[in-house]
Image (tube, rainbow over all chains, first blue to last red; front, side, top):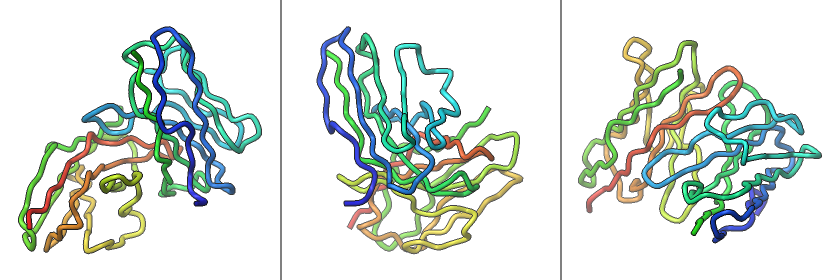
Length: 115
Length: 108
């Protein structure tokens, strides 16, 4: 499968623990996005990268969240001191470039449960 | 601020009946409009986009700038159309905003 892959598929953690998710985009894709989705809601934008540069972070994203894409390939999303409200599906998506109308390719997501 | 509104959370139609999923947006510039679909146990994927003026799986969507709408339509619904549908807009920086989704059920 040469699509966007995310690891792990599921993560259960206790409140206060740190968690890290990984996303591997389609290899030639320059853009990488992180979204969060809770039950009954659409994907909510968190942040995105153009190659290794993080271009924007959502104002809704607290300082406990950090994302990196060190070599412009895979990306990690870390949540420090997790809270129960962080429980959600975390989606990664990539696109070939930043052209208007460029389509997103999504991964299967990481389902986070904070106990 | 950018916003996408999908007023129907749930929509049920009979097989062979026409279907319309509503989407309204607010955006200060000229966004691009998309419909994404998620079938059961599959990942979210693009259905169609306004820029391509395409028809995919019998679905079409017309951009009405006056009403700021991008409704998705299909003249004859099929059982395999049952899925979750998300309307989305993107700005010139290609940042995407999604609606809350409409769950479509096609009744045999």
